[in-house]
Image (cartoon, rainbow, N blue to C red; front, side):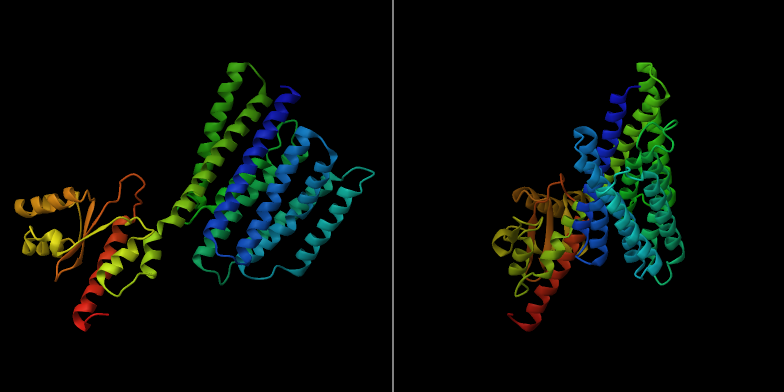
Length: 399
């Protein structure tokens, strides 16, 4: 194992952690409305991202200014973490803890800028460990009056903190003889995954623990295989395993990021419904279609349906107001042929009943590629509202 190997491994671990942190910031921005809690999270993660970036620049380029900036970022992380847990619990942390975190940040900032005797790295480690221990206790004793969702978020953060503390010590060379790598990036990635994971994802403590153990086991297998193939020592195994583990957790973080942005676009139909024109059913469907997956839908009324059996179609749509080709086998041959003809003629994937009397349909084309799982429910909601608009006009005259 060489110094070059160590530099590469440390850089890969910190680089993947930086990518995961930036992804977590993007997810929080996408999911959250501007408020105090999201701002605190973004501030804390931004500080972590700055620490990782300055660390990488110092390791690989060596200018001393990056080392100073790195220590400055590290000095303020305890206060940032305290602000986050305070926001999660919707209550103020004890004043003594905030003053201690503020005083520590100031003291170590001074040491970072003016350090004729060298920066006291082990005092910084002690300061960070004590701060995280206090935050961990706050996460246990301050959950009263919170909603279940808020408690789940705090539980995930609480679960990730011990992992962060254990891996953090490796950055200061405490276990250098046994762990020849700066491994805090592993814990930072794990923390990001736990923080941004929605309640429906694999982010419960048990599921997260299992996922972390499985990812770790696979990383160790990759590290052991690479070590045997290259005939290297124990330190090389640790380094390759850490890089593989970071890559695996980064994949989990990026998966959550993709999920978050997909979900942020999933409510296009709902947004269109909120602002829809309800003066009549034709204006309604046109306004809903604009800017949603229903864009390009064709309205079918007397002219388009003149050659079809209106009675049979009304009966079909009374049983199934939103029809797709997979629903056709449930109908008699004559009705099935008419519905199939409509789908084929207008190259549609769905037929939607907008009005029963007069009979008005919408032919919508929604490709299976890129279709989200909630589209059937959204189409059913559009159909129900269209029928309400239609019946309101029938009962009260033109709007």
